Length: 137
Image (tube, rainbow, N blue to C red; front, side, top):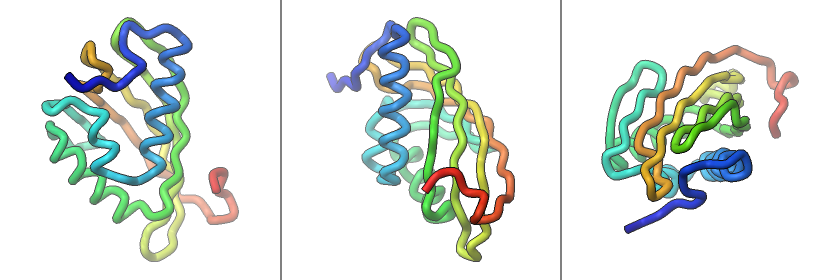
């Protein structure tokens, strides 16, 4: 059985480590690598999209990073319980016309006993920014 430490039940230390690992992985922008952190049947809601499974996750991430160029993400632990973590995040990106955005959001994560994420719900809002206003480089 594949595992993705740290495993639930989470402590403050392991929840922070799980959030940092997710941030690091997403900043690689390697869709298939990132998708391995989720169960085969992981359920997702991202903005107004609902889908499930690793292949759908990888396809979604590939589309996302083709649109959101030079993507750079920061995540922060908001709260946690035994097998759930809530994060707030912000990321910056630009489109092909070089319009810059900062996206703000919240995610709720639920983990299987093996440490793979079995459910992810994300609410995200985009704000137009000037390149000079970027925080993440």
